[in-house]
Image (cartoon, rainbow, N blue to C red; front, side, top):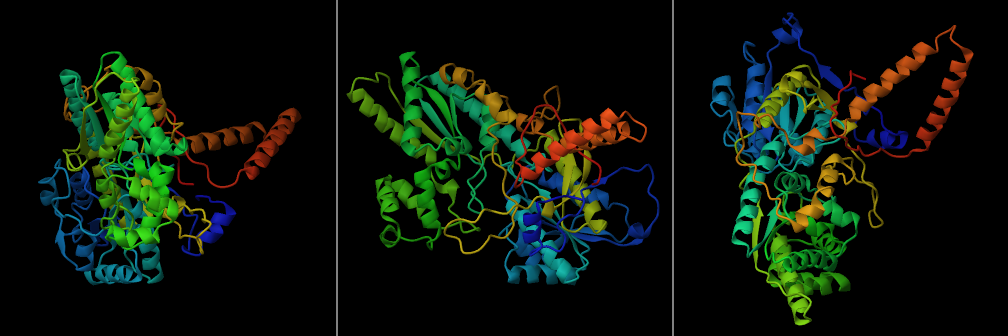
Length: 581
């Protein structure tokens, strides 16, 4: 069974009946044995709740193929996301229909709309839709927010004694729906490769013209539940293309950098390159960068509490004196963008903030100031672009096609087996697809409890939080080894379009291949404990018993001192899985 701290488990029980459900592994069999689960007809619905991502159609193929040949069983796809679910707008997904979309990016077959099932009314509408259609399973596909909703939908259905099993699938180009149990989200590998081609081409264009600085803002994870967004996609693209600089939200937040610090760092880079006669370069900017700056974080927090859209004259009187002064110091275009309509989770739309344009303008002002002091003798001309929509529906890579197909098939098996409240997962992703291991992890093992803030009056409900870039992880360490040389030289690389055949077709991105193997370490620990027990059987040397007892007692005391869950680290070249525990 999965384990949580006693405090967390007690709090989780206020929301969920079971908080220690086991991790399960699905093992292949040579020949199906007839049984009740085979004779039972399954009707499994699927809803795309998250944003568009490459590989989603291949996921549907996996679902349809898993029920192929099961007489009376079918997959129903809801047209238009959650709104289609509430309105019972469904189409039967036959294998032939799904395979006609295989290898196509996006969600064209079913589409999506509002991506929430959260309120009591929405939960009730989802319940009655599943009951009316006779669904034995409901698969919700999306990121951290979608799978958080799926956990509460599963619990709501349990309380209503519904026979519909609710299963989640991790999907999203931002790549932050990962944790100790989930190695990757569907679409990340494809989006990173497609984005790298755009960035690589742009960087080489800059080194050819030798007169522009390209500020490229990279679409990434949005701010969810008050947490600062992630920069996985920007980091992976940097590893593949070698720009002169990358501004990561996590690093800026870790260093507590201000906007002025950030501007100075970019201006220093431009000045150093100008001294070498290089008045060009490429700077990658994470989409959520501004939310990592203390002054912007405070301002955004205050703005999120106000109804939007609203005119500035109505907003300013409701801000604190410091935030009001900071807001008024910003360029007009940023002010207007901060007051736009909010996204579906009532948070600021970071994608609407032209961070790259703001940085380019402030860097230009700083360089003009230095030029007036005769400390900068180069030239600076900027070109700003936002990259993201161009890759959300790209052709999926071989990895994402296989991964999505495997998770689609796994989700059907979990739903048909009545494993409600589970997420479909696959392990050993750095190995060939034939060696992957698939199974399910209970949502409750991935839910976290946010710390109570000074202004909060109640403890927030448990949620699956997007995982941020680990600054001690393998991917970021790889960038740190190259960043100094990349800043001064032109190491630009253009990996080209996604390859579906040839020597590079099976290559997966570094972010996935270097991820730390949490469950692999657990499996190793259990194996070592079994070896200790074997060596300390009755009749063994008393010294062995004494050493083992004292060592384990010391280790146990240390573990008891550790409070709260540990964040998973990352280590190159390891894969994970463990038997059901």
